[in-house]
Amino acid sequence: IDMGDFVIIINAEKVALTGSKLEQ
Image (cartoon, rainbow, N blue to C red; front, side):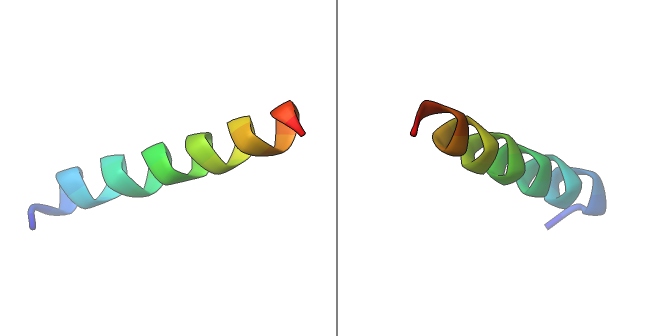
């Protein structure tokens, strides 16, 4: 995995987790 792609994946997961918390 390219380091740039890895960072994007981590950021996407953080956004998904944050979105789930806001919906609750």
